[in-house]
Length: 236
Length: 237
Length: 126
Image (cartoon, rainbow over all chains, first blue to last red):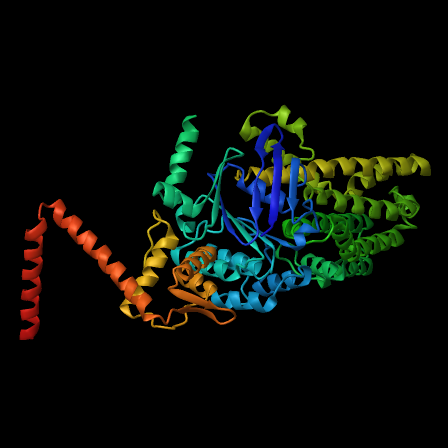
């Protein structure tokens, strides 16, 4: 098991605002991580930096042994928390796009995932319901055989059925050679999904642990532990 | 690379719900021919063509770029290649506007000295490089919104206006104005037309360069404003 | 089976599998779902499932055949042992609950014996 992602004292400013405040963490291959924290804690900023979508930062970020850049995009799959497809694109256009520009894209797999999610080729993505858009985005991104998946709030605004389907396809994609990082504030949905958890609060990682350890040592759910930790953090 | 160009072309032919390359290709030619045949007032043709040019530049530099910007940020291709592909994909638009302008020049050559209108024929040496240059600058700079949004932010505007509502208004107006002016030919052409009679070639060229530099500044600020305003839309994670 | 998120999930799944074996729902030498299939089926992290299978193998309740999968042990004595373990747990729970309400020792045994004979008679009548 190697380390796929490592950051060293990562700091990111937006103007005068410090969005990430010295984050030094590691992620190993073959695990599913929860990157948990409330809105505004810096999750999207962190993932965007690792996905090479933001360029300016202080400290170190090493993805698969490289600095984030166009080469890392070839094995890192980022799922943003909004619909990033231009208004004219249909499902088949998205398929073609990923097929054209990502070498690790498995079209057969993606087609199957789309079929599982009841998505038709001709649908205009922007016209789909929020739940269907969420399914579609994820199906396409998971169609890539990436080494690192960065999923930003994949559960926002979707119903329970979609959620279950999404979890199922996440698990079907998972392999020992890949790593999934799920950033979310919907912790109850991911309790059984996660190997390890990192808590992010106001740009700082305030805790890291294995999911089962919390259950074993404290008899708490991750969510309960989260509430406890963040309640304390707020009163500090 | 080819795939990128193909993708850009696909986008370009779908601007703002309107449709196709045919539309863009044929309109100025048809309109110019019709106006010629109908013996339209030359100044009407002039304004029609200029308006059309502005439209194409607006289309090319604004909507089509922005709509794919974020998606293209994800692919493992250098931004330079992306810009290049966009430029190549917009060659048809550049050619069309140039062609229609050429038509305009052709139409306007003889009669105008008597009518007191600007001498298009004299200007044409500078038009094309300037047109292309401003196009290229416009494209490259609008794409600066692909680069990290925290590069430069229009602090000037921010400091000038503290009240949020007013700030949004100012930002909105600025945005609209700068997009309108983005057919940077408009500024320089207007200046040149006005002074054409009395200016030497060198002066014309200098003003052209100044106009292009101004357009660079306008676009750079513009691109960052766009970033800022999209950031303001509630992405606070 | 709904898993409680407050206790280690791998333990709960292990107990569940042991129970299914004792019940006979999972038969001797039966092939368990692959780790991937199981994780998708349960909506649980595959590393957790892998841990379950490893632990079960350590306890010799299952054995892994390379390339073929994970199979329930053919050893009836191990299954018997499991049964006894579960039985013991049930007894411990029963006794604890009875003691909590103040019924102990001989009293408990009498009540149990009476209940069993009543039940036996009912079944005979049916």
